[in-house]
Image (cartoon, rainbow, N blue to C red; front, side):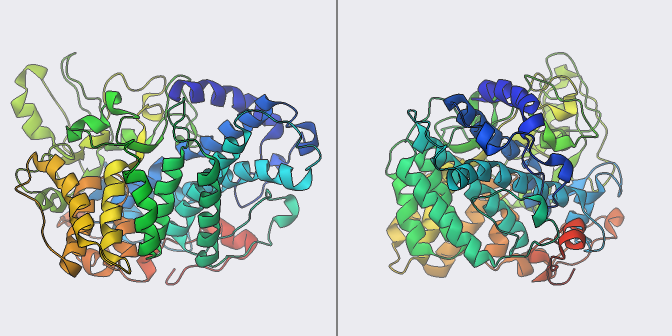
Amino acid sequence: MKKYFGILMFNLLIILIGIHCAKWVTYDPHDEFKITDLDYFKTESDYRTAMVSAYTPLQWLNLVVVVGDIAADNSVAGGENASDIVDLQQIDDHTITGSVDNGVLSDIWQSAYEGINRVNYLFQFKQTNPAGDNIDFTGKEALYGEAYFLRAFYYFTLVKMWGDVPFFVDKRLALESSGKLTRTPKAEIYAQMEDDLLKAIEVLPTTQLQPGRVTKYAAQGLLGKIYTYQNKYTEAAAMLENVITSNRFSLVSNFGDIFLPTGENGPESVFEIQYSNLFPYYNWNGGQTKGQGNYAVQICGVRNLSGSADMPFAPGWSSNLVTQDLANAYDANDERKNATAFNIEDYKNANPSFNIDYQVAPYKNTGLYNYKYLPRIGQTSGQPELNYSNNYRTLRYADILLLAAEANVKSSTPNVVKAQTYLNLVRRRAFNDNAHDITLTGDALFDAIINERRLELAMEGERFFDLVRTGKAATTLSKLKVTLTDNASFKPYQSPKNDLFPIPLREIQISGLSQNTGY
């Protein structure tokens, strides 16, 4: 799928010069369609090309993962100094304001809405031109199932970051929409996500020939997660059970193998965002995230790292540094610790033949790096920083098990045995034994599950959103994440203000959107 996406997306960039859908919520008239619905969707290829286009903005959301840990207690922005990737520093230090746009947040907002516009292109054609929608081909219904999933995924990204957001379905934004947008209550948007995913489940296949394509199980997993975010635990438990009992997924025996190139789209992958370096991206001015590569990988690397030819790691920007607090949360026998928190000095001492040299992270140094997405030699091309091919493991089977464990604890008819079973499946993989099984019940079991999510999914972008949705953010994040003299700008976490991010200023100025509380 990665190579398939790479080729089609490259060609699509050329095609979409004429048919490019409306960019962002802030509509730019230069992005008006040159070819209309009536001129397009004449062949099966048109439909499939439009669907590939709808997948593309998934790749641009790679910084959501970084934000999900930096905004929490798992990592710090790091970098060269206080102004290095200043947008991440603001998120780390809780110093974002509503009066100045944060580039990372604006990019995520724009990318998610670009995805929605591209998906809605498919739906709008069916709505406005049913007579023209007369091309039938095998898999057409399933293709629209993918579209339903993608729309739910994009809106889920927006809602968990901003709460109430502009909402539209079955149409693209038109020029006349500019300046007239309003924010829709997130409950209404969640209802649409649920409806979209239920429709997707009805028509999606259980397997796809191309890795990265949405399956029925991916839709069930995402719906179960969305139910969990709304505390609809009974519905979540039932939906997630479908994925578990399908017997299509299993936990990889060696945790660290998941994040190797050979671990991509493996037996634990329920849904995975595909990245490629087949057509190198060089355009810094066009947005670092807008290529086919996973730009966020470069952020995690050790600064000025060098060594012998057989040393496997590539240098990076010493950002998104793992906190000592996270490292200390792991039991000494937990295999996930070394597969998550990479200590470069320990590695250097253990591998003298590599002749490793590096620069200690100049700012907010913790000595620990994100091993899951540490840049490696051979995984990039062209402009190295922009073209890492590392997939994001967006929905892993372990995530499904822990969500199901949580849902079974909080369900209207709790099933403690199931909750413990799913939790301990994850723990047995981490410890290679059952001596660390958890036998707690009630609230203590719930807390253990949330803590397990931190340990299992650390540096995968889940931590901040888990803390917010469970009401644990204020008490957990009100403390200083690290004690560093150069972190003087840090402001204590405030709830409800910091539970959401500020609406991008440009959207407020153009459309008059209301700002989130406290900004």
